[in-house]
Each structure stands twice: as C-alpha cells, then as structure tokens.
Amino acid sequence: MAKYWKSKTILAKIEPTYGVDPTPTGAANAILAEDVSYTPMEGEWIKRNVEHTWFGAKPGVGTAYRSTLTFSVPMVGSGSLGVAPGWAPLIRACGVAQVVTAGVKVEYAPITDAPESATLYFDIDGTKHVMLGARGTVMFKLGASGIPMLQFTLTSLFTVPAEAAKPTPDYTQFVDPEAASKANTPTFTIGGAAFILRDFELDLGNDVQPRMLIGQESIIIADREETLKVQVEAVALDVYDPFTVCKSSTRQAIVLAHGTVNGRKVRFDLPTCQQQMPTYQEQQGILEWPLTFTPLPTAGNDQWKITLT
Image (tube, rainbow, N blue to C red; front, side, top):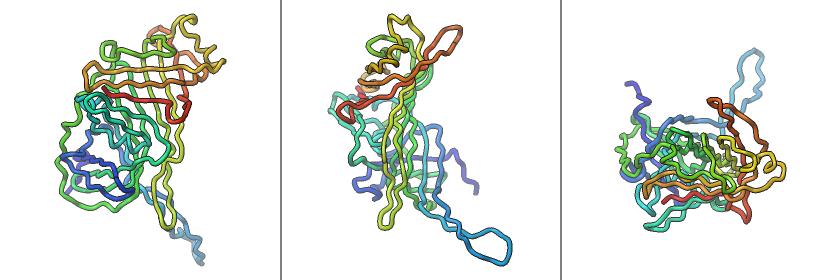
C-alpha cells in the first residue's frame, strides 16, 4: 500500500536525560508544522580501498548516522498569559532558556552551558521515525502581509524507523496567528527611531554538529553567531544615518513588537546590534534600505530576548 506524504505528524518533548526517549504523545506534544522536509538518514561513507584484479566499484562502510528535520510553525504565543506555547520544546532544543512567569509572560534568551535536547516522533502514514537527542537552530521571519514564522532545523541521532499506529494529534495548544501589518505589528524601531518595515529575519546561527565518538554519540551546539536582516523604507539621514552608524560602529537597540491580543503578543529586544555596510533597493519606486546587523552580547547571553505576553 502506498504511503501518503501528506499524512504526517510531528511530536516533540524535552529530554530530562540526553538521548533517552521521554515518550511524547499526540495528546500533549503535537506540533502544528508547515513546510516540512526530512532527511531520514545521513552520515559519512567510508570507502574501502580493497585490491582486486578486476575493475569495479569498491565497498564502503557507513558511520555517524543522524537525521535532520526542517519545518516552520507560526510565531504566536499560547493564547494565555504566562503559558508556554506549543513550540516551546523546539526552541529550548536550540540552546535557548525559557523563563515562565505564571499569568504574566514567557521569556526566551540564549544560553551557552547545558543546552537542552528533545525527542521528536516523526510519523509518515504509519512509519514512525524516533529522533533522539535532537538539537538545532531557528530563524524568526516576519514580512509585510505575511504570517510570522519560526523555521526550525533539528538534527538528531539516527534510529531505524518502524511501522506503528498513527498518533492522534491535539493541536489546541497552537492558536491562530495574526498577519504582519500596520495594525498587527505596532512597533519596529532602530536606535529609538520608528521605521516602516518590509522584512525582519533573525537567524540564531547555531553551529550544530554530530559528535560521534567511541563510547558516546551526541548532537552538540558548538557555537552561535546571530544575524539580523531587515529591510526598511529609507528616511532622511538626520533621522537615521546608516553610513555613519556603520563607520562608527555605534551599537543600536532594535525592538520589534507583533500581536494585538493578550497571550498572543511577541516582542523582540536586541539591545546592542552592530550594523554592517548598508545598500539600496528600489521597491514600487520607493528607496529602501536592506540592513544587516550583528546582535552582540555584552555580559554574555544577553544579545537578544523574546517576550511573549
């Protein structure tokens, strides 16, 4: 019988112990994903230099197996103040700490030490893939007249898939998002100056690597280098001068707030961004600035914060 790609389910749950399956369930851990792509098995192929008296291919041995899953989820809170969203285990597996203030807010910020990991179940029409020890990276994307999204790329240890009963997912922890617009995205500032925004993209830039040793196999986050790209409508240079800002390396505080309903609001604070060289782009006959920034830490792990209210 054919397997239907459309019939797929993703479950995700944080691992208390690295690489040990915490058994995510459809009732509590389902992920409402979009634009899914999956590499079920990748690794290194070691070709053997076997000597023969005839021409022909040489055998090899596979090693360092892992799996990679990429997908997006809408960038919106849980719908309730101080309650973590359904995508919480995914961002926590990207080297990000979660702080919940019950009934008030949920905050996310980068960490360096002891990053968490997650187990994901990826089911394709009854073929179950168990992704243990998953860690990854994420891009936050917001564009005019589009739905703000988080795009995750998660890498895990490889396990052999097997046939299993398809889970029954409960997606009630995912609420409807609001499109980015003048009404729904009330704040975007650079250095305290308000800008008309076309695109916002924050890439965590995690360096995710398989570490396959004798006695231990894991997926690690070896480093991080964030990049922020925005495209804004150009303004007079006495309001904001991107050329002088770049030349002087003056740090800029950048703030983005999206959402109008309590429990669904998302705010980005990037307090010390270094702007790179600006350029020009024309859109509808209007001059726009594509600007690239590097969010820089001050005391460490303080280069950005995301607050859900």
